[in-house]
Length: 163
Image (cartoon, rainbow, N blue to C red):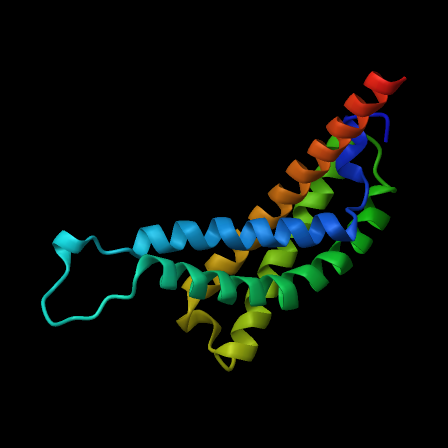
């Protein structure tokens, strides 16, 4: 992995996957909570609103369950398939495109599986949940690449200072 372009073409270690799943859950939950938060000045009388911290904890728990039980195992399968396919392509651009296509298919598959198990197959009635899981999967991929690039940079900086 001495080539930074080839950084995207290697499988991700499991601790990086776990940490990127946690960062995905936290970032999605913060965004969801602040989008749905009702300020005190706009609240209706005689209506209970959950505190911001409570909504954040519940959102993190729900997204963490989705990430750990659905996206994380399917990403292992997706990486195995896309890494075997990328070896057949010549050129870094085609290899990166095949990885992106694999993760887009992973997003769709995890959304459909979520709707089958949670909504009893009523996929098109709950498109918001499928859309949210697709966004979670793509953010998960982004965090994986950010963390892997950061560890690559740290490893090269440490070797440059010691060597």
